Length: 115
Length: 109
Image (tube, rainbow over all chains, first blue to last red; front, side, top):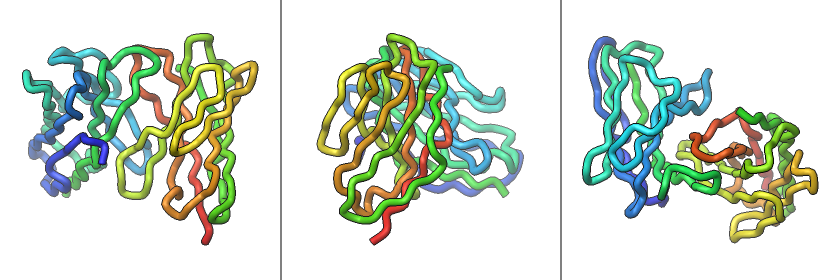
C-alpha cells in the first residue's frame, strides 16, 4: 500500500459526459501528479500540482483540467469524453515535487471506460 | 528528455538472480537513475534510485557503470511476485517522470 488513495476504482460513462477523479496523496506529500495509461500510448504524464499551484503540464488535453485543494487532495476533471479517453488514470504524490531524488508514490488507479 | 533503452522482455526462473539492463548513453552529470516497476493491474511502484555509486535496498540492487552510460537492476532471487514491467528512468530534477516501454519480466516457477 503506497498510501495514495484514488476514487473511484472503476468508472463507466458515455461519450460527451463529464467525470471527476479524486486523489488523496500520502500524508506529508505536497506534490500530486496525474498520469494516463492507455494500451497504445503507455504511461503519459498529464499535470503536476505542488501545494495548490500548478507546477508542470504534460500531454493534457484542453478538455481535461485539474486542481489541488488546500487539504492537498486533487481532482482531475475530464469533460466531453471520447472513446479514446478510455484508460487507466494514476495519481502519484511526492514530498517536494522537485529535485532529481524525489520519489513518486502511485495510487491504484481509476479505470475509465467511455462507451 | 534523456533517453533510456531497455530490452522489451526478459525471462527468469524462480529463485534465480535477474539482471535487468538499461542503457542511457546521453545521461548528464546531474541525472539520477530511477527504477520503477508495475505489477499487473497495479500502479507503478518505486524500486530504487542512484546517482553514481551502487545502491542496495530491501527490494533490489542497482549497479551503475563507471561512465554512467548504463546501469543494471539486480533482483537477487526472483519470485513469482516480481513478474512486472520494469522501467528505467532518468530524472534530471524538476521534471515529471517520463516512462518508456520498459522491460516485461516473466518469472517461471
